[in-house]
Length: 386
Image 1: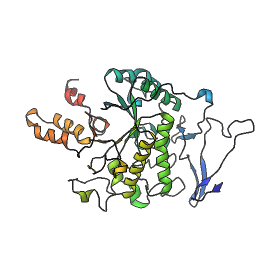
Image 2: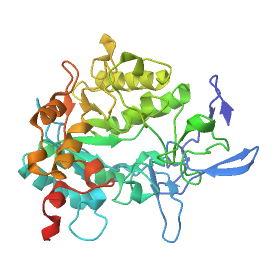
Image 3: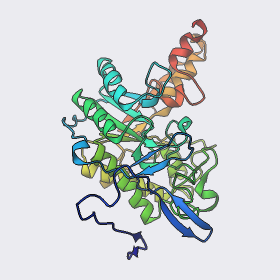
Image 4: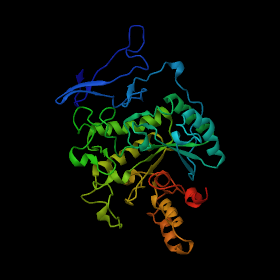
């Protein structure tokens, strides 16, 4: 191995004499490092595919480079961004009426046509990045460049996205760059035997509520990793944009926990602001829109950060839309009240409480209402009768 000028170690493996790759497609691969705390086996941070073998708990990294005849070739152009997004959020594994983990192929054939018939023009897919803990709904990511193998192969996912484009549907990816799984066996945590390779050290590197690790956005290699990750999903899989998860947690060292934002600018531009994280968000939005001007960038922020949806060249964070969480929460709140307790002024305030010219995505409900400690609107209305 050789070390470059930036301190990065690299090893180049040329193809075999017959032109075949040095590592056969489908091989299990790991990186072994002799660290001060002992020998450490890790899955490559850039692994493109990982699987969980029967009877095993940790995932295994797979060298994924299929022969040309097995690679999926996209047939349909990406649709233009509509003036108004009508987004259907879905989890591939939970999308079947049968009690099973659904597949990319079944979602492509059975679910996408229904989404189109219902009048949506975009589908937002959860849980694409590989995650060992299935019950995390995909938010405790272990392998950032690998689509989840629970649902099929990378080629199956490409086929799904191509079919969506054929139907005129944008495909948005729920991307997680706000934190990482704390798994050490098959995740980034402790990658080189330390707790600071990709993350902050000490308490700042741990999210106490999510039980996960927090990236050090001030590290050049972390920036390279995350920026290239965003580009990878756009280039390789033809996603039409992202919904960035947990952006509020990124922008403040208190992560927005036990905080009430009143609109005072000192709450947004003070010592609690993670400037490195905000700069990263500006960089990734600049990259996305620089490479793909029609790509959609949605940020999940509950703080009301000023400049959130102002373009980067104008000094803003650069998102196209802010995910307006309060609206969906308001519908659930109203369903828990008697009709005569509803206050129209309160409802109007919730719907219109946004910054000047800021575009927002407002759901009737999303996984944050339907799955995380609550239930769907349909069940709020009729569960006592079924």
